[in-house]
Length: 173
Image (cartoon, rainbow, N blue to C red; front, side):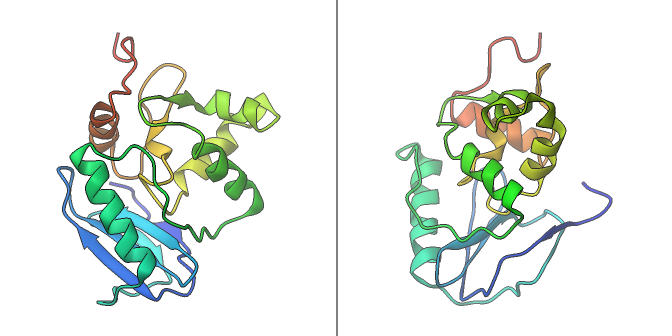
């Protein structure tokens, strides 16, 4: 686990939900505009949100879509998102939404897509600050030489990529 908790801003939370998964319990938060946070329950985070025992339309929809994803019947998410971060982080997270189920990309490829191949470290930092794991698929980003970095742990990243059939065949060669 991380030495310091990730600092995440979930906005003005009005909905909360939890869901079991093969990789651990998932917690999610939503505002009136959309899902604003999704983390594994054992991740250390520092956020502005309390664990509410409330639900709203976005948290309910996200739980349904996540259940479908876990069962293998969903490969894309349509729930509204309310992401809080810098303009650059939001650009990276938007680019992540174009990395489709069953595929991976690298930090360098994302940096090039964003217009500057020298931004791969900045892309990595923004990727690691993603407040909505799985739905904003930061787990689909791998290093040029293999599996690196994931706030939920590398074992979970590997499991998510296997679930999606996205592990490159040469990843561990």
